[in-house]
Every structure is written in structure tokens, then in C-alpha cells.
Length: 252
Image 1 (cartoon, rainbow, N blue to C red):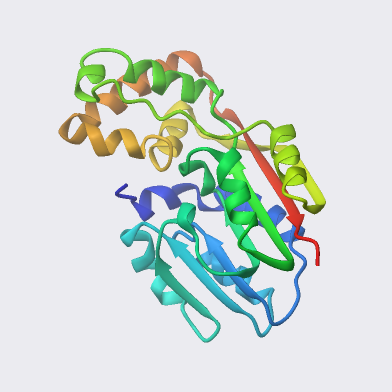
Image 2 (tube, rainbow, N blue to C red):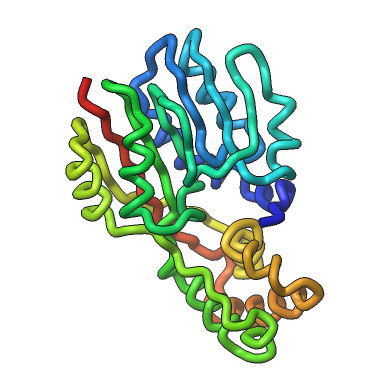
């Protein structure tokens, strides 16, 4: 998908908040071979590397646009490369992923695949958005199912593959994981108005729709914006963003 780093970073501080909660779950040790799946533009991967002394950290992403931004953060012990996180190879002491696995399907299969790439005693730490039932997501799915967008999109809908928290816990247990921690947290964001909510989802959830809509993108956004103003008429708007965080360790 063609990502726009500038659009994504319009709410950079709000998007970064869950990263720090995820980073707090990491058992920071030296001399690790670590990977950040979905490293984006690299700022947060650089902070992860700062927490892991004398370690080799790789930032992996499929977006050329994001990797171009990330290149400026490369240094000794920190490299960035293109790749598909769902086809991860190699053996790792830490698999870290902040707000990226939601773009890969079938988490019941994906999580065991990633867990199998951990060395004995290694850790996996993941954060994924679980906001797919918020009114903003309901509205864009509803709009995508209306004409003329339904025909232009050929019926396309991006359904979130994110599992309930108990299923992540069970999946990790079935993998033989230890020190399993899984929780859901609401990040309370206060945005200027409903248009700001549309700006937020334009940097993430709407990206695969924009890719298919081409010159009809602005028309699609306009229809969503009108519905959102009706659904969220107040100023400012309280935007409760729900996210899932989990961590587990492979037995030594």
C-alpha cells in the first residue's frame, strides 16, 4: 500500500503513546538480535534500539515511503530493510511490533509463526489497534458499501483480523509461551472536531481504500466527513482509541 508518512504523522504524539507502554513490557537486555516489524519511519525503532545496549536491531517494513524516512535513523547496530513481516525469516531474541500486525491476516496462524522464530528465552512484544468497532470505522465501511464507491471498489472491504484478547492469550499458551501478558487499553485522545477524526483514519484505516479509489478518493472522504459531522457534532471530540498489547517469552 502507498503510505503517506506526512499524513500518518499528523497525530504523531497520540500514535506514539502505545509504543511507550509496549516498550515498558520489553525485558531490556544487552547483546540481543532484535527486529521491529512494521518499523514505519524509524523514529520509534531508534528509541527501541537505545533501550537495547550492544544489540543488533533491524527495522522491517514493506513501505518504500516509510523506509526512505527511516534511513536517516540508521547507525551502528540499527539497520532498516524492506520485507513482509508475515513471512519473517531468521532467529531472534526479541520480536517487537507496534501497530503493524493488523495489516497481516489470520493472526491465529501468524502469531505461532512469529513465535517459532524466537530463540530459547526470547521475547515477543506486540501492540495492535482494536478500534474497528468505533463509529468512525463503522461509517467508512458503510460508505464503502454505497454507490458509487461499492462499484469502484468492486465490493472491497478491509476487515480487521485482530482477535479478542483472550484468543491472543490462548494462542500464546498453545505455543508453549511463558510470562504471558495480554491486555486492552483505551487511549483517551481529544481531537479538535469530527474532521480531525477523519484526518486520523485517513493516515491508517483508509489507506487501502484510497489505493483502490484513485481519483474518487476526495469524494469518498467528503461523504465520510459529512456522516462523521452528524455522528460526532461536538467540539472538541473525545476519541477513545482501543488497543491490545501483549508480551510473552519462549522457554529457555
